[in-house]
Image: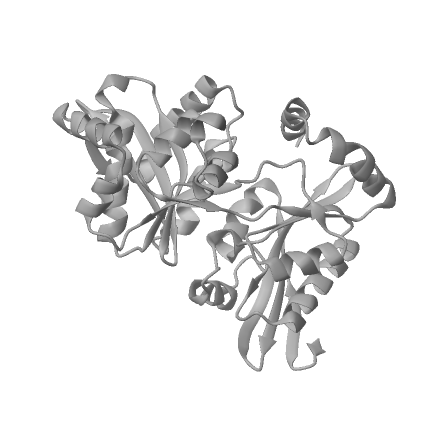
Length: 363
């Protein structure tokens, strides 16, 4: 279908090399929009619905939605880290958003989430004008920490908190060793992740090891996935599964047995991830997820003692990266009754911490 200068198509293909190539060349392209991610999510019955806009033969914009049927409800849809645009073109933005709303109706998507890849205020304004509103149920990452890998390793180390540097040196003195992992180590990694979730009292995501194996199978073909394991006397203590795309390495999931904490295996592990990512030519390392209030406080030069703290947030900030505020997720409720419930009930109770925890468990 042609709209003005642009040709728009919608596909359900699980493999789309042209779309993935467009994402690889786009500054805001991230792995969650790739057809590779769609192949992994198919394991949990998600179907890709991809909107692609082209100018002549070149792709200039698009969005990959993942859709799944829910009994007695219809379907739910999720555009993670999209839409993606080659330029700030209001016409293109309107075309893609209009087509996404049409898809919501055609696929009977009752709850359609769009989580933009960056704080693009123009895109967010268009989405809100189309009826999207702030999402209150799913727990999206609201802030993160980025390490600039263009710096020398000595500079990166100097930017860390003194205690972080001390713990790294302690771990190295205690002979904590870090090695690359392989497919055969996925089971070990997953058990470490489960143990971490048990200690934290949270439900594991992903919830089964087969998902991680499928992720490895699909992404490893392109060198997009890396596993690092920290050991002491050949015992694996902790591990990081990282996903690389374009110029950024993202620490996707982590796990720790809880043993030998005084030897600081996790500090050595993350330091080795930094060194590995830099050695491979990547520009950034994304620590994936810190408390948004603390990130805002740092960026506003406020006193953190008045905000509070989180153990993992404090741990990640200790490595001296730059806090980044990410965009909020928005939702399009394609049902008048559900929309009424959302506006009058969820929008109010969703602001209460205990209610948010309940809603997230349900989701």
